[in-house]
Length: 505
Image (cartoon, rainbow, N blue to C red; front, side, top):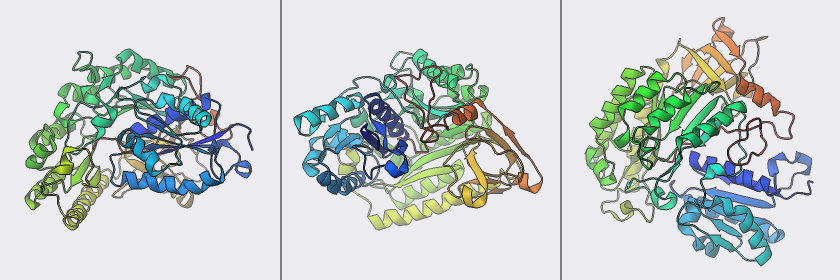
């Protein structure tokens, strides 16, 4: 077994948390810890020396999930008192000392604003033999200045802002992440350029509300300008972003998307409800017709755009008429897919104390109807691309059944999941390479491209992303890049791709 202490970072929730977890891993490795997964299996302990939970407070039963996971670790802590357990993220920011009261075997609790403190807090807890709780109310340092260990060689997250200035009545994020703070465009572009120099071919720009980016430094069109600037970076093949807010989504962003070749025809636009009455109660400052108008303008500029959304069923006071409006707008919107949630009370939000909480049985019945409708809409949309050739960026872990089906998987330019059959004797792409094939079947949740084995289109384009992935395969864990300090250093291995919904609830 390695002499160095091992760590295990466990991520719950959204893409923001995935991004933060990369920073936590980088901090721990810079402090001398070793990723548990990098230890050869015969020598790997059952539990790491340090286990970090990066938590989410938005999803239903987040607290039950956290305390359940902590309970599972209690016997390991009793067997090995030197094991250290840390809890960070939104649940830590919200519950603070409560975590140590309910799980006194936890060593460190840290918030969303001070992830850079983790190594010092672990040392302090070890020295003082007591739990250390440090929750800052404002951002200590922008996360992108911290060391990082990214999870992919060819695809990466780049945070352009943190926090949120909206006041949605169902959402606890602003109180946990704070007011929006924007990075300067030059800093964002420098990070993107550094990633591309390492072999990254796809970047996703992250923010709680990306299209209000620039308000803090006085430029309301900064986000569209940032997209266009990304289009000037040689070697960057794909640019995505998440999540925008319909109230602030402007035509200059649509124009930038349509006119910048490497910005993908993929848009996540949270609807939440189709009922104007419910949207008002949610304090969402748009109405259904404005929302549909945005989608019309997006599709006029990019006819093949795939649009996804977030939906909440059973918000307090939602009537059958309100729900019927949601069904109407969903049908008209033609979403390629949707993250659909049953409303649950989040303590600390205005909605938690609203009258007319909808009974669970009613919420479930409506939820089932909404899922059935969205399945029909998604399936029709996916059947509509049958016969079309698509470019697929191959990624490991996208296809759970690839071994059984002899296919490889990845994302098309519009972010749809595609499973591609590799013809016998044909070149097999590496993760990070691009495959061109024709869609032979559209299922509700994915596309199948068997054209190659049917005598049709199949070609592989080797990319710098594939080269970067291949260069990492001599390590103990395939695809695990080394740590870079702060923004990625040019020439160092890097980056990230993990599927998770944006924190746009």
